[in-house]
Image (cartoon, rainbow, N blue to C red):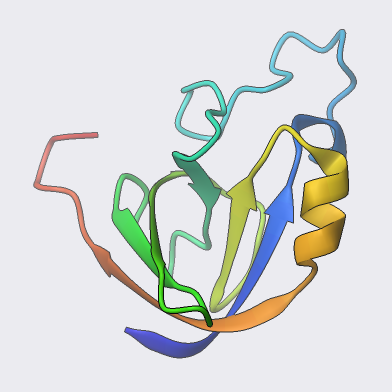
Length: 106
């Protein structure tokens, strides 16, 4: 569990690949980005394939799959297709926990 984890939001357009790049919208795991599912992590902190739970300030919990990388340290970057929403959410410090994938299930 990380009690003061940096949580941000990203879009396919903000991940550094042009829309005509063959890997545009494809995560480090090889899976496509998916709203409400995809999040990026530092794989040395949270293993790829983990189920990641983000505890929001309003008491709700978001559950995501760690299929992407691109952040360093105790940081979770959640995919959204909506740039304005990503900006609106900004940077938050939230509690995050995860369940590592079972051996060989990635």
